[in-house]
Image (cartoon, rainbow, N blue to C red; front, side, top):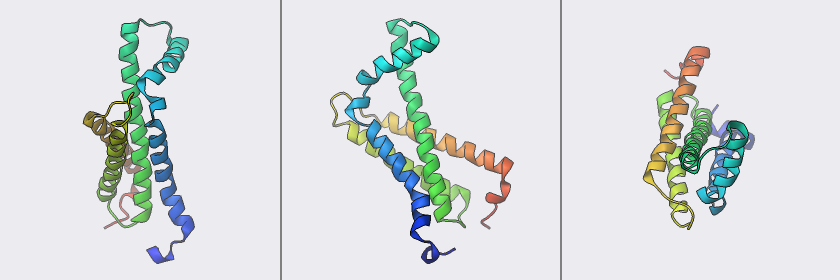
Length: 159
């Protein structure tokens, strides 16, 4: 199907998840989701499930939870980009689509960290961009492996 044969429904279907993912990242990038605001609610949930923790241990757990959120969240962002490019470029090889998806994820991660640099209760770090990109890349590689095992015909669609 050529680009001219694709209607608005196709383009919305392909790219709306990317827009939604970018909007969610933008919302989570606000001062409201800073570490100072998430510590209390997350600690409450953690202690409901796992029991009381010391302040020292909570500090480490909270950092790990937040960094895991970066990794997993951008894994999902990467999948939305991967799907959008896969639909948009139906004859492209997986590696090309994956690189485009990684570039899109890196763009959102960089914009996220840049935005956070202007907020008083947020920090901005190139390491977070790297963590976000690794999360996207790992998730896309897992998607590749799943496709390779369960639906290899999708990976061989381009010569």
